[in-house]
Length: 525
Image (cartoon, rainbow, N blue to C red):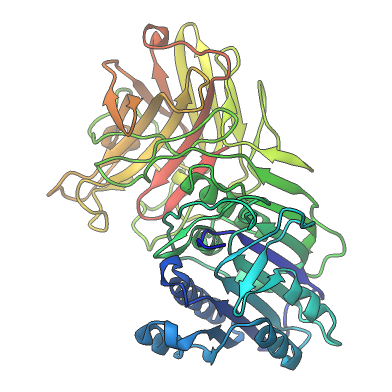
């Protein structure tokens, strides 16, 4: 209760189908604890403000926003900035919430979003999955409460959302630390205009802390990034992507979950799916992107982030036979995803169908593993994994990265990429001994050298294939010639006589990633 961690729970209820026939209103009700400066709630409000204004532009709806906070405790500059897009109300108690929703008169095509950022939790004996918000005056209010109040109104909004960035930990037990988060940009029209139904999601399971820091809450920022992501075509994909990112970014301390109840495209009669997905814990190291270190992580059965690499670039062994004509990527950032109903299959698979556990690694059995995901609409198809596999072929280890598309040439050393940062990477993170941490990373990558010129090259010419031995927070290159080749839309990396370096033991696992600095990323599983 005393530390801001993050649980975010989203409750959506779309009560009428069909998109708005006119400029409907987007009502946003935001409550934030600005009394505790250390938990970063004011940054969450600012970030949500940018998101709401983007949604307004893309949907054509009228934005009517109110922000409830302690004005005296907040930064005057940020409060003035908030006033540019919302009415600011001094106070954020349960009484303020009830009064605001009571006075609300939504139209049948309107959207109502309730968002809370602050402390929260639950008592050990509480029933139900969602947290209690700790509102001003120490009122404990269930996150479901705003949706319940809206349900009592005569006219229901078309879409109702409740998003809570707060802990779901046991308040009669111990506390936990905070961590960092991130934000991105993209598109929103489809999500807000084309869906009906209902679902509930949370950034942490009961009993867990959810993490946040000076730049806002982890799940809020992951959710915003996922919602902006053009690779996420629907709300289920948004939540699954946010679930994956949040778990990886918190080293497994958050286990996101969501319960879909009849969510469907607007104008259709039946539900698309009804599922509960509980994310397993994930162990991660610092995020990818710099020559100082890219992402490392993972645990067998619990999780894996992109594999850690060290600086390196140049020419990969092997020849290229490119396909899929497309312009080289040099557009505004778009975001790939771990989304799109990720599934795994084959030997030792973990499918996500109906009620299932969401896996963050693929088990390796008899030297084999494979998995797949449904691609989204990212403008960078070469960063969208669709099907992957790992296979022992006569003592050689072969990793295949199937992509949505792979054009003949890509832009290397873009001026938009900082010097000494990784521009491209396709990697397989290997936990060879089944101890829950990654031991090796097999990758094809390119770091932008300082002072380099922009050029268009094939993947095999512009990137370097490596096998990295992961040691703590660092990595060292293994002296072995990795063979890289292109087969249509697939990148294939081969480690000859890999057993000279390691052997797979019981519990071994692998996770695959594709990363592009200017906006693309995807993972399997």
